[in-house]
Length: 269
Ligand code: ATR
Image (cartoon, rainbow, N blue to C red):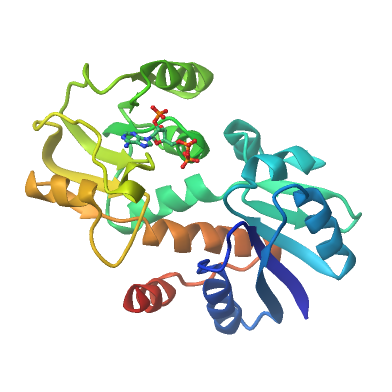
C-alpha cells in the first residue's frame, strides 16, 4: 500500500480523503490517503516525516501552498507560474517534484459543462493566490481576452503583467469594468464572508456562465446574483474533483472517472 495525504491547517473538513478513496476503488489502485494537520511553523518537517514513514505524495492546501512550492527540488511549468504547489510527488531518486493541478481542474470542469474557452471573453474576479494558480491553464485555452478585476486594482495590474507573455490579459479595478463577458469566474474569497464584489448589472453576455471557485450546500451570493441576471451558475465542487483527479494521475498514471465521484460529493453537501 502506497501512502498519500493532504496537508492543511485546519484540514479536518477536507474532502480529499473521500475523493481519493473513491478514485482508488474505481481504478483498483492500492493506496492509503489520509488528512494530516501540519504545524504552522514546520511544514517542511511534516513532509519529511511523512516521506520517512513511506509517503509517496501529497496534496497541499491552505495555508501551505507557497511553502510547498519553496521546498520542491523540481517544479512543473504551471507550478512555477503559479508560485504555489498543491501536489507533491516523491520521485524514485528521493527528490520532491511539485505541480499545481487547480488550473487544469478548473479548465476541465468548464469543458465538462460544455463551456468553450477558445475565443471567449473571460473575466476573473480577485488577484490572490487562488487566481494566480489558474491563469496559465486558462490562457492556454486561447480566450479572446482575459480581464482580471480586483478590489485592489494595483494587484490585478501586477498579476496581469506577470502573465502578459502568455496571452491577451489585463488587470484593473471593479469600477472600470466593461462587459459583456461570456465567462465570469469568482476567485475572490468574498463568498466565504457572504460578500459580493461591487459589479455592474450588465456584466453577462447572452448565454454566459458564472463560475464560483467556492462551493457549498447553497449557491454562493455571487452565484445567486449572477443567475438573477441570466447567467448559468456553476460552483467549484467540480473543480475540486477535477484537480484531485489530475493529482491522482500524476501519482498513479491513471485517470479516474470524475462524474460518479462528483455526484457522491454533491449528495453529501
Ligand atoms: P486566496 O489564496 O484565496 O486567493 P488571498 O491571496 O488572500 O486568498 O486573496 C483573496 C482575494 O479575495 C483578493 O483578491 C482580495 O482582494 P484584495 O486584493 O483587494 O484584498 C479578494 N477579496 C477578499 N475579500 C473580498 C471582499 N469582501 N470583496 C471583494 N474582494 C475580496
